[in-house]
Amino acid sequence: MLLHRFLIILISVFLFACVSNVAKQAKSDKKETKPANAGFLIMFSEMRPHEPEASVRMMITDQFLRIDEGPNSEDFILFDRRSKSIFNVVQEDKSILTIKPVEKDIEPPFPLRWIIESQTSQALMRSQNNNDATATHYLYYLNEEPCYNLVTINNQLVETLDAMREYNQVLGNELKSNYHHMEGQQCHEAINIFDPNIRLQYGFPLREWSVYGYQRFLVDFKKDIIFPASLFELPKNYQNISL
Image (cartoon, rainbow, N blue to C red):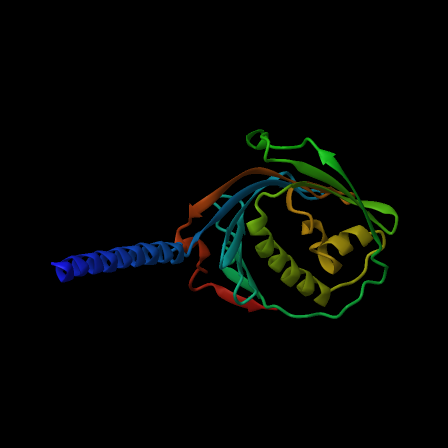
């Protein structure tokens, strides 16, 4: 009888351990089955000098950053985060301009002396007006001259910043390849070529505007979106152009 009871207890313990291990394994497998094309959908309104206001859509996943003007856009930029390559797709002439990652050791012909001041901002989207959402306004001075303004959302969308930094760095290095200094464009050249990620060091940009006429503000964002794989595929039979 004692042996019988001991076997029952032993079997019960064994079965509990098995069930526990199965549950842990299932939980572990669940973590590992994140959809490949799951990520963030971000909508901006953007204005460049001498151009009308335009919509900019970003889709950011672990592998890609896609930039276009919206659901009906046939032109788009695709950044492959693994190969660090940028593909600029133009439907009109059916071409794909490829920009490979390169390091360009070119120093700016002017000093990069930044002074950055900050203050609390009330500029939040209506959906962000809660106790967890705060914003900060940063004023950037380059060589003691006003250059750039930035309002960041504190502690939100931080998961997207690495993809944006990687893209900015590759693009900035490419712009160095054909760089020719233009008088009076120090702020523009510093922000876009020589120090392209200085505006991403404090958090996700809710609003940004410059002394040279560029401005952009966040319209909306969504998390945990599963995108169609086709959005991250390059069109076939397009002419490939490499820089």
